[in-house]
Length: 327
Image (tube, rainbow, N blue to C red; front, side):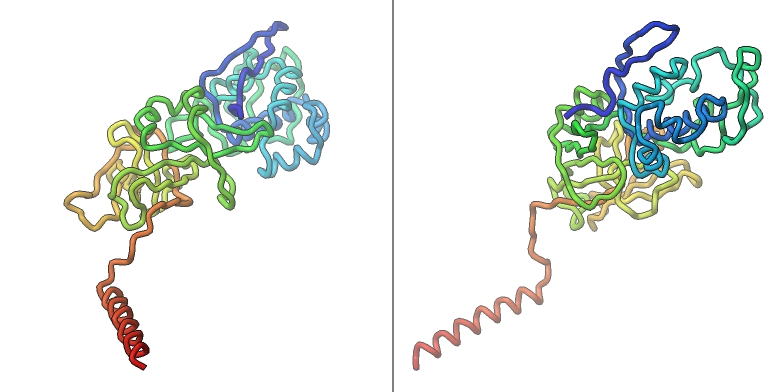
């Protein structure tokens, strides 16, 4: 296995320079910027359309169509060919969202343009270009929002299929410091699960009884990455990663607009021991929406009536056996 982005080469000023990024980002995020780059190239007249762009970056038109519809993510070879062919593209922007698309000296006009406008490309009018703004992606200069963006590190197989990293209880303390470290994440065990659907997933082993009876001690919960606090649905279960509380699985109430906090709620009925508490958004490193649960405990139902019926059934079986022996 390998990390989804590694040792990408940037070409600039007619000189090849290798850039090693210590932060690696999910390909889904890179794909969004790849599509934004296509619109930007289209607006500059650098490409004539999807077919022309696909040919230039070494993929088929149908493959680019699947990418543009959100069905597939862009591959590493296409990214490398793109930054080689268009050597002014800011690789840090493409991979991490840092800076702007164009590494050339560009002064952007504040007037938005649409992707069907063809603006001439010459040094004399280079300072009048405005980036396409009809895609729902915030520019690097946008003010702070409620977004968590995407995970810092994602592990994929050699054919670029994402797999699920598992954070055991014994590794949870290290995860708080290593969640953005590719070398650390690569050491975590991995699992595969069917039917989770789209999105980036991660698994966490849960410690304690705060979520009984929903989750038991040492259950493994699988969460899908949450990009924005706006996506939170009250009383659903999320994995919340913070410095103060570590890694916890809780039901969440979004009270950011009212009180500037998220309220975390335990399922355990003992509220004296497992009471609600608030977490400020800026203290949250990651959030994952729980999609599945692997439990290794199978407790009997706490039902005294069922217990009495079981006892009666066993007693009746004994009586019937004794009567049969007397015949």
